Every structure is written in C-alpha cells, then in structure tokens.
Image (cartoon, rainbow, N blue to C red; front, side, top):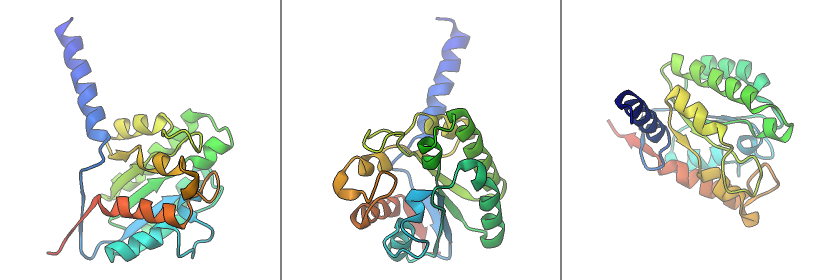
Length: 201
C-alpha cells in the first residue's frame, strides 16, 4: 500500500477512536455548572419535571444542571436558543443531545449534521467542554444515527453513541418513542455521572 495513503488511514482511525469514548472522564471543578441541551429526551414532560435526567444528574453530582431541553424542537431552531443560554449562564460543560425531532420529521441528515456542528462550534468558541450524545434514528434500533460519529470526528469532540440507544430499545425504560421514563432517566443520569470527575480543589 502507498505509505502516504497508509498514514492517512491511520490518522483517520486515530481521530475516530479519540472522538468515540465511553470510559474517559470529563473533569470539572466543584463549582462547575452544567447545561443539558436537547429536544424531547432532555425536556422530559415539562422543564420542571423532577424525573427528567438533568434534574436527576444534578442530585447525583451536587452540581447545578440546567434543563435546556425543548420538546419537538428542530436543530435549525435550536442554534439561536443555545447561543442565548450559553451567554446567559456561562456553563462549564454542555451535554448536547439534539436531533431526535429532526429524524422524526424526516429532515435531511446533512442539515442536522450542519446544525449540530454549528452548535458545537459555538460551545467550543467559549472554551466550554461538550459531550455529544448520539440518538437513535429508530427508537428500538439500539444504534445511534450514523451522523453523530461523523459530527464528533469532524469537530474532534467526545461522543457517547451507545448510551441513549441502549436505553431507548428497552420498552420498560421509555415513556414514548422520544423520551425515557423515570427509571430510564435515572439510568441515563447515573451513566453520565460516571463520566464526570469532580475536582475538590
């Protein structure tokens, strides 16, 4: 094989591996704040739903976690709202779980990808850490839509591809085709807590 081509493939594989991880920690200070931004999965039944995963994650980590979810929101409409929240709240960490409503409404994947990348760029430009959560194209498929990995690789950000699809494929953990029930949200929050390392300094 051509050595230049071989080196290029190796670099691509390395970038992909860096982008997709499940065990590495997100390091945060004890006074950190978190913004959970997304559509139906994040929103829950209402923004004050005590069983939505952002509220459970806050209880587990003892950190303030803002529920930045909005039900039925398309990614094209989410960018401006994200910018407003980032500038108002100045979070240290954003959990980005968006695109479910796009897939429900048959939005072209290329548009969803472009919008997710715009969101990530806005987050990174403010020196805020971000974790991208992959959402399934079909509720019980057990797999994230393929574009989440591509977005993470392009933007060189961590992505968790398996967590939400694994939960969504279990009917005992879902409230409907787009949201988890209380038990599902507890499992999601617990898994996210395990990815967060809080420094006591």
